[in-house]
Length: 463
Image 1 (cartoon, one colour):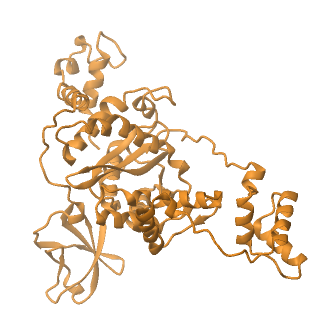
Image 2 (cartoon, rainbow, N blue to C red):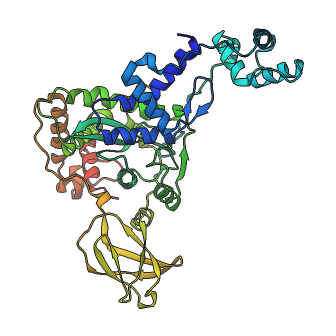
């Protein structure tokens, strides 16, 4: 196989590899293909290309029929229409100045031969077949410098990992990592790669770890949504999307995903009874708090918890969080001054009868609905009939945690995490009796630093 045909086949296989997985359903395969055709992909030629849906389907069928060889472009059996003397001239021009582009070489040949010459694509294929590409001659390889945020919460990186199949569905892990400390500020397993799942992870992260300065994400559907852009705009967070085809900026979270695979998911393969989504989430949180956050990072030479502590957090208020995560729907007000939303009925101002209004609501609390008309607030709707309290897209999967069996390592982590949390008790004598060492403000008295830290952790306000 010619080099250029081999590289093209590798490009095609790398693009459709995820859709070839026999373990996913047809619906999941369709979602993977739809996501592929929406992105730009780095082609071996050096440019970015977008592939159509029919082309991806043809490549999948070709691979199933003939394997990897079937993905290679067909070799032309006809005699080349471009005279060999012109192709030889292209070789000379490229060797003479390796920085010339194929389009420039084609123009030079056409100018020297009265307007007759090969196309730029023909020149590119010919020179690549001979190993005379610009990258090969110049030795050009893009170098990426090492980047790290200067302080905690300056930059968060968010991405998702396709995990194991749980209850017949693929488990999706949404993760958010602090770039400076490598602390996992938010992580959750879900069954759907949707915006509402991402918002749930971010909302918990904002409440627990304060607000970041920037949020770095890719161009997938959950990250390119208007809801996420609105969340960041309301909370004063700069939303940054990575350049299509250049995932190098997400290296830290990709490395964390690999650690999750190597230390958590690999242990689940030995389980006699695989855990459900609730149990998997419980295991993940215990591993993060008891193992990952307390282990010295090989790059920072300290634990993520210790490196995350030295900064002044910017906490959001409850009102700011609610305003940031509100959803909006447009409804027509009936003659009786009522509107319906997901089976619920609400009463609005009578002056809005017959008009289209915007309903803003928290997807996790449908009892509180604010009414807006022409961009101006018209008060809060009065709930008359509330049959649904949570938006269907925001509901978590049902089910009680099932006891895991055969997962010795992860079971120990979970038990140790819960045992440590439940063992924290407040010593009221030390808190109020200076003689006991708990009342000194300047470090006087004999006291236990660990006990003080435990008390502070228990008494600290929940934000």
